Length: 143
Image 1 (tube, rainbow, N blue to C red):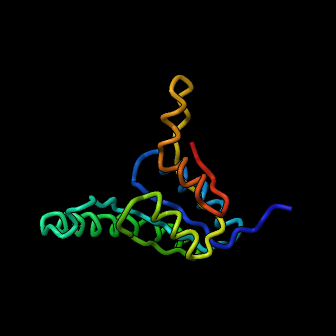
Image 2 (tube, one colour; image 1 turned 90 degrees about the horizontal axis):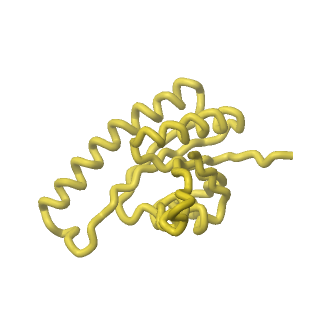
């Protein structure tokens, strides 16, 4: 019997390839009647977080992300699914992994890219690969 996922986390980066992960997560969440969290992480710069200009940039990025996330959440809500969004600051891998662990997420669905067979070592450095290794729950990588 297939597992029933109750809380699906979808890291969102607003890229075109991210749309495929959103579509698959939409179908999976509907099938499982799962709660959905869309998570966008604003990558912070080490050592200059107290700079006013940098903080203003973070604030503008958060406002823009929230606006786009609201429209994505609306699609889930319109189909009767429970959905919310979160914007976090920090390192993407650590924020995604810690959010999944702290919030009882039982599936992460995220976009990835195919491994370059000529340079496979470069694929190890990707956010999606690192999340797939570090998350305690299953991770579905959508290519």
